Image (tube, rainbow, N blue to C red):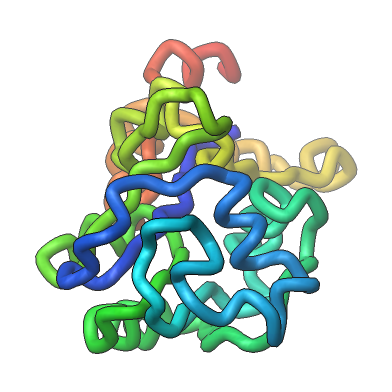
Length: 200
């Protein structure tokens, strides 16, 4: 593992009715069987308004999509198909920021970069649990569940044995002075320094 990431659930800032969601409600919205059936906010929770539910999410070829579907629906790469999907997170930000009825998901870094245009939704892993805000700190301390995850690099043992430069690259990559800075630069959450030192 080299970093943590969180998947942020976001709505339009003019959305006044959502102060949190449960994982069960996310499943209700995003499961394949929701397509053509769960079309309005009031179908997600009594008390939500009778307004159209407009969904945006990471592209279906992305790891973020796979992780989100596994964590919420219970099966990787399984969701309704009638949502606006994009590999370009800026398209998702613009879509959600431009529609009061929108809800979407993407990597935590894009929410942090655009928090002036979006409203983050705290998530309850179970109905009776405390709602937890998507943040760097909550991804790092493990409380933002089930929507935070470790990010890994994978190294061929054959390459490590035969190519000294591969080993040097991994050492560079895992060195705390490099990893913490570079991971933060690309929007992921750095591992604690002592975890990185364990790989020496």
